[in-house]
Length: 142
Image (cartoon, rainbow, N blue to C red; front, side):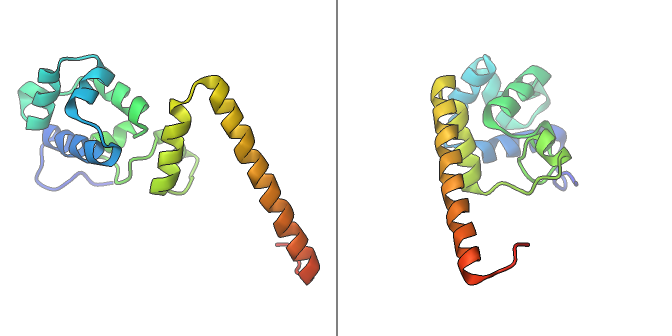
């Protein structure tokens, strides 16, 4: 996909980082903590100049922590999806789906496992209701 028109690479990263701050409700100081860099380094990323070039390590930390692809961060992709999802051809995530993933990833492993089992139980429940309704109405399954 195309990079934003008339912007250099650092300006694209700065634009994408701004979008992340708004979307995730975080501050530049949070990015500094995620990347384990100084707040001044992060401030320079937002200026979009050569002195503020983001490192590969910081970009990877942002990608992993905030669930966006490296491609998106550097302006080569329109949607902020993890790269592995695009390769599998999955559809785009809605805001609620993305939020749910963020919540799930923030839970301790034991709680995440319980949460996952609860969601599976709800899905099984609704699948059962749907199948009963289909059977009652004599609808052929697709």
